[in-house]
Image (tube, rainbow, N blue to C red; front, side, top):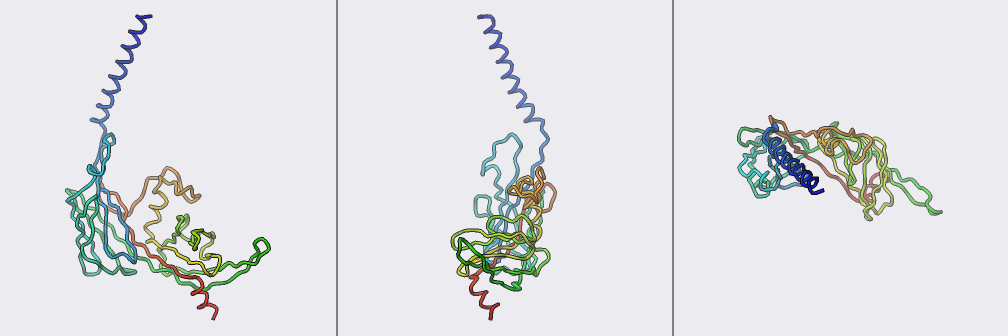
Length: 267
């Protein structure tokens, strides 16, 4: 029995030693290319532009904010005939020093340089859709008559994507609206939105069309369990460059009291 125990200990020792050797071998021999990672977005009401600049780490290295943070990148945003410098403010964030007024339809171009890497991206703020009509429709709920307010919208920009508070699954349909009780009401048609009760507030947002591939692949293709997603896809961004990955998008928002808009279309 004692002899068997000694043999078992020797085997376990050899196995543990082999695991250590394997980890060292894998760590030293795995091919690895460092990537520059860019993350940022801004909206029509933003007063500063900001972007996060980090780098990737080898597969077996434990990541920390300090290890991935880049503090000496050169970040610029070009728009119209202007150039805006983004200054490092800590925790991987670069922020514009001057305030600005974001405009719809303007091309905002990001350029980030660090060591031998150059990352570039461009985006615009899409125009909000036009409300064509609002129709008030009655329905019965437990013997009481209630109303649904149906919005008919048309996009001004072909490249915009509609998103609500719960996440969009199609860039043409399903707009989610937030009412005063924080409850979402959804429909799955191209341009129709329904909202209950005239005292409620509606809000929705629109991204640049470039956001759509990222949305569909941001969870490896599992877009919140959506039937429109495809599992196992590589995440897609709009930042370009060799050994670079990232996302940088503009978005617009729109909202108000449904009662105010109903007055316009019923007069």
